[in-house]
Length: 303
Ligand SMILES: C[S@@+](CC[C@H](N)C(=O)[O-])C[C@H]1O[C@@H](n2cnc3c(N)ncnc32)[C@H](O)[C@@H]1O
Image (tube, rainbow, N blue to C red; front, side, top):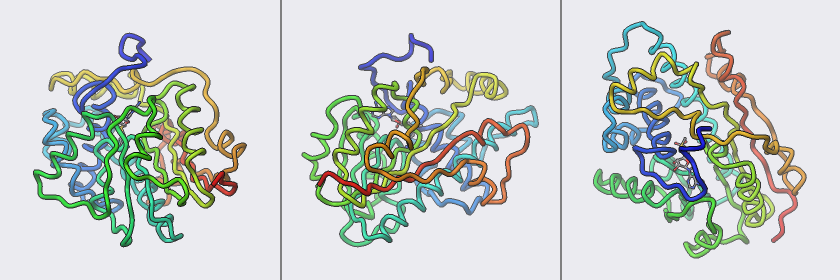
């Protein structure tokens, strides 16, 4: 992490700092759709990215980038593959949780995630989206401008996840007595190791027996890996390097931490997800294979 870029009370919109990483991943989802990737279907990704207005990402999401074969194409295609299969993992998680009868979901760090609008939520489902206020306000206003309707009872909770978000969540109508499906996709490295523990403790305290939690442990793309695209981003006014924004330092293994607190976790490596979609990682793609996905089920709830 570059310490000059992060501090405990930092804020952002979708074009700056950590917020811009939400635009980056949404652009990849848009590009997956434009390339005819059937792994996911996110029709909201492109218009949301377009509304943010970072030229490079707008054209990438719209399938309009002219990618000379100079290394950019390879890096961007890796990233599109990665985002498509990880999105699918979390989509499947939601479907399985709803199939198990859960009707309350919390999407932590929702960014430009449009699951509340694009998934088939069973009747009676309530979805809470938690992210920083400027992020929530932008997505809500943009989707309203597109006449998009949530497919569930959507409650937005605009708050920083390092603050007292459990109180804000309860005020928005969250019921800790009901099992919950929690999503933390693309979030944890942006929290310090301590803040990660606090987040997992809060989730545990709010989770009735039968709750489910899906988390992602990702290896941020380093400057070296991004080198072929950094100059292109920069020439379009986007000079953010995701690896400069994540917290270094030892942190608890999420599955072990949760399993010591009444959860039971199943681990899936990214390499397995890629292979399941016919995208076995090439040797030079190996850093992506180090991402891990956990689905944890609360077997010993406090409520
Ligand atoms: C890589 S984006 C992922 C967005 C979304 N989950 C997705 O996969 O499309 C990271 C997101 O984490 C959110 N985030 C990071 N730290 C946060 C914090 N302390 N409080 C609230 N949101 C946070 C950012 O605002 C951003 O939307």
